Every structure is written in structure tokens, then in C-alpha cells.
Length: 364
Image 1 (spheres, rainbow, N blue to C red):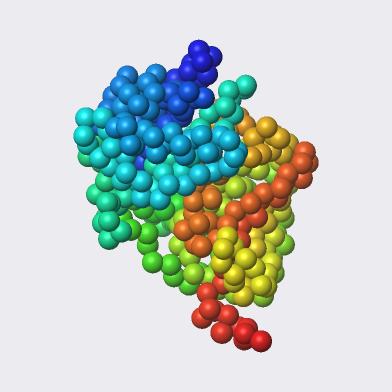
Image 2: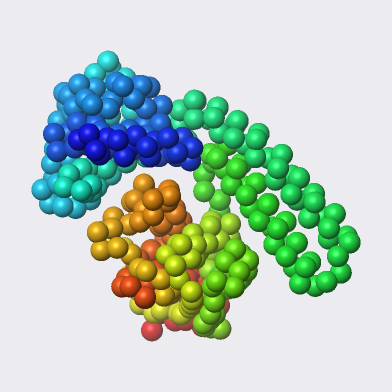
């Protein structure tokens, strides 16, 4: 385990990991914790030394250790993700926590590990899950927000000053994007600072979201990237959160850029009679982000959406995880297919029934 523990230790030093609100830990073949992120240690009120290097029976009460151990073995034996909804995590000392727990088998070299993700929830269905977030995490996020707010305010103020002096339409458009992105980042900081229930979805134009992303990715890549638009003009309005969708699509576009793509095609189409998960939808919008980059390595293909999984040495392994999370927030899905020179990430978003009626879609 020495080599693996070393790499995990290096990952844990990344500053972004300290802000990851999702508690997660890795178990080896003997159900020994080989890694726990700061959110996990804060949620469980245990130092890393009291988790890492210890088996489940050392820090969980017998019933909890048996439950988690059985789920871990099932995930390994069946090589599939196992979900324990509203599981009771009871520590040996008597404290208890409740979480939706997901166990996913992963491999690191020749080692078979299980990634355990815990989404804290209340004991009963009506409880506020946000109350389970540790106070220490709130304190660190308040510090982050304080540090980030000031430069964001400065950027927005500078953009407003320049706007008064510049008449060129293209330059003013750039300033509009700077101001809008500053506001979006400010909203993201506020979400980190004060976790709140998801914002209500409102009627949006998906093409406006994509156009914002196109402008940003072209500005970031310069002449190194050609962005091709292939839009279906019949795409109806969707119910969505503009900021979150921009974040998801931007992550997917940046993923293509970081894979060495010289061309990215943004393609929208309307799909009929679509099944997303277990739900059938009469109509959905499909967004394909197609690139000609290196593609997804075969060794990563089954776990590319897991947190901390990245094909780059300097990657955080969070971009695709966040994009999938945002897709699920919109009752949609995110999938991909890839080979060298041709990778397609597909975002499916259902069309609300009201929009279907507006555009004349019937049940017939």
C-alpha cells in the first residue's frame, strides 16, 4: 500500500480538496481506510490519524461496520455501484450520523479499492440536510468568501469604468462577459459560503447558455481552438439554472481543450420518446460536445465521472463530476463515448410539459 498511500497523500495537499463538501474515503481489500478527505474527517469529528490505516471495526460500532462491510463486499464482488439510502453511520464512541452512502469499486494499479461517498442527511426525510454540514467547513468557507469577494468586486468595478470609456461594440461585449462572469463567480462563492436548497428552475434558452460558453472557451484558447456551432433552431425552452448549466458546459468544453482538441463542435438536437434513468420523457434536448482530442483513456472510461479521477497529472478530477451532478439537478443525464480523435459528451435535458404544450407536442 505504500505507493498508493503516497499518491493519495499528495492529492490531499491540493487546496481545492479542503473545500470539497462531499465526505469521501477509500477502503482497501481488507476494508482498511487508506484515504479520507477533510470533509469526511470534519463530518465524523475524527482526525485523519484516527481513520486512515484503520479497519471499519476500529471506528464504527459493530452493526454499522457489518452494514458498510457487506455493502463494500457486494460492490467488489458484483463490480457495480451500491447505494445505501439514509444509512446510519454510528461511531464506536456512540455518535451517529445519517447519510445517503454510495460505494463504487475503483482500481489503482493492481489494487481493488472501494470509494465511499456520503451525502449527509437528517435522520428523518423532512430534516434539513444542510444542518449536517460541519461547522468547521462553514468557517473555512467564510474565510474563502472574504478573500475572494474583494478581487471580484475590483474586477467588476474596473469593467464598469472601462465600459464608460470604450465605444467599440466588440470590446463592450467582452466587458459584458467579464461583468457577467464576475457576478456568476460571486454567486458560486455565496453558495459555498451559505449552502442553500437548489434554486428554482426557470425558463431558459439553452443556446444562450452555449453561446456564453463558446465565447469564454474561444477567449481562453485563442487561435488554438476552432469552435463549430451546429444548432437546431427548433430546440424549445427548458427549465434550468443558467449559472449551473454554464458551469457544466464550460467544464465539458475545457475538458476537450485540455485533451488537446483543435476543434470542438457544439451540436443541439431535439429527441422524442427519451428515457433518462427510470423516467420516460416525451421530449428532451440533446447537447453534444464533440472534440478531436486524445480521447478518454480506456483505463479511466468506467470511472471518469468519479471525483478525484483525472487523466492529467495536474487535474483535480472534479470537472466531470460536477457536470454530471448538474445534469442530475436538471433531471437529465451526462454520458460519453470516446476514441482517439473523436470524443462526444452528451448532455440530455428533459423538456417540461408546459413547453411541450406551447410547441404543439401532443400525447398522440
